[in-house]
Image (cartoon, rainbow, N blue to C red; front, side):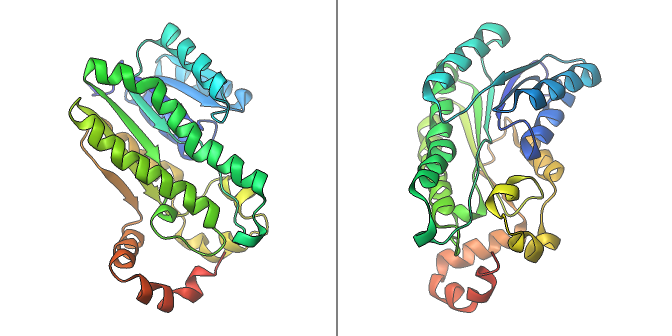
Length: 263
């Protein structure tokens, strides 16, 4: 029997990309999947697919994670209809590639509201129950941008730095209660994320051959559930770059500056 059989897995940002693919893989493993996103039509379509294809329970709720009042209400509804939450995958997020002096303050606030405060709000909805039951797993989708900040990603990188900092502290706090915390740090993924982040298409064109496939990332995420995996860093060569950057930041910034300006 799969370790996810009958477990309640909640996924934010589940309407597309790695959120959608992760939901499919979790359902394939027998999980009761709860889909959250702002696009309810896409969620309802995916819910029907999961129920018909995998004969498992699936639920869909419209949720804007930036709305903390809505977060509290929806998570209460989830517990009422689907039971206690065993796994939370904080996947909702967006980015906009602009230089720091061009960044709009409202856009900046929106990024922090979704990428950081929304993630924290959802985590706070499940953490007390997980700690009380001495089991559970929280998976936060961060980014390699949270390890290496590059030009045109000052705000986005700042949000992902925040996610990593929050997750690292949360991991230590939750360890004694047997609640796992994993961060996922992918490089660029072939999803509609770049429809907003890279309107010109320049960045996608420059890195297209290096882009990860969402189903590959989803496989890594699902295989890590209920394990002590601290981080999932993809691709491996990019993670080596982040390690080298931590040790020798000046060298990386000097030698790699041309590559960094590919956005």
